[in-house]
Image 1 (cartoon, rainbow, N blue to C red):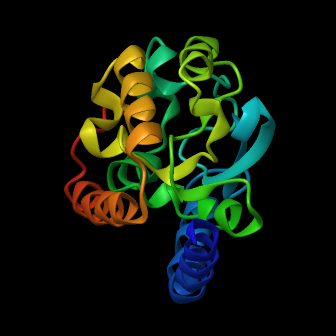
Image 2 (image 1 turned 60 degrees about the vertical axis):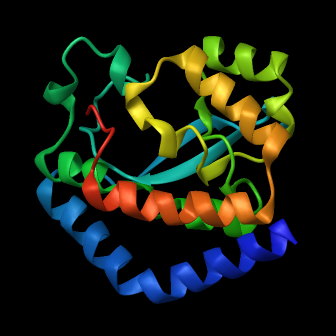
Length: 186
């Protein structure tokens, strides 16, 4: 049932949002040199690495680490990229990852390939068995504002409590959170 919801939701989302996706891609290309999409190496289900698309929100020469680990994140984020991040519009290309099965609409957000601390905590809690999500329980409970250990705890809570109804609630809360821009540090 969950996979059917993922395919239907991602397919419909890509279809309906295609004009917006094209406009954002064009705006990214016009604002700064480089591709519109950044393909980030992420940790997926069973700790397998996959490539996840995002609209590029940083300069092409930015280090490949989590933004919070950069000494001066604003130096690397483009002006449009900051707005895309605050509204989570940079995440929309991940609907493709949901459609092809690398991700789910709801699940733990995929860790960067080099976020060993988060991967280890999730693996210890069994969370690595889940398909990563476009949004998740930790996302609607603090996003960037919560520490790694708390994200892993919330991911484990999602693993224990997950249901279609919980997923629907998370999707609705995500829409509200994304529109407000709440919980984004960079």
